Length: 186
Image 1 (cartoon, helix red, strand yellow):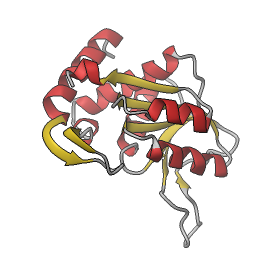
Image 2 (cartoon, one colour):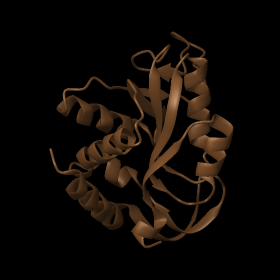
Image 3 (cartoon, helix red, strand yellow):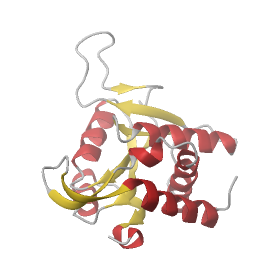
Image 4 (cartoon, helix red, strand yellow):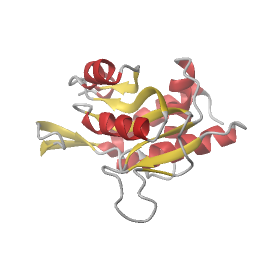
């Protein structure tokens, strides 16, 4: 296990090197930006994934949030939840991961939240980055419908575009983030 400061510093370096793409892009929210933070280049990277799990687990723990499972809207949250599950396992903690579909399935078991059940459990909703908070709010709604008790929303990078304020107002839970745009030089 890497020290918290070392893991955070190395993850920040990897985000800057691998995930920040400069140029005009349209975000999932429909807004335009002069850069894109492609965190899948980090969350699915052999070295960075481990660091994502450690940094995000520390972030939630330092906020005093107790939880049994972590996950969010597929696909941005999937590798973040898995990384946190593995980081927790490395610390002899049982934290499950889950995946939230955009809509409930109309076939099979008809679930919107996949993985170990969240019913009656304290959970953290994750996202890699958030602009408007829409994806995280969709996940919060799905988890609550499945009986989960959402304790917080946590993201790797906050774009400082109102997601924090919207999530805290609409979901009524704390919004945590590991890195802000200022740390990325954006």
